[in-house]
Figure (cartoon, rainbow, N blue to C red):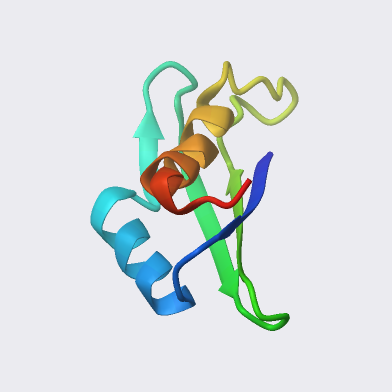
Length: 88
């Protein structure tokens, strides 16, 4: 499981629009032979828009849980899409 958290300068609705435009929330990775899903939570409860992205399900097999970087790659896609809006 890979997690990314950051703050952006745009509203939650605008952040959601960017993510919907540039990021696929579920995909199949050939190298790990599994589906990966991406859960993104966006809030502005404290006056700043916070983005929390979690990639899961990218490991291979029931007992051997190596994702070969697929989870990190998937979680990074949210950060890349919102990169120009990230604060600090």
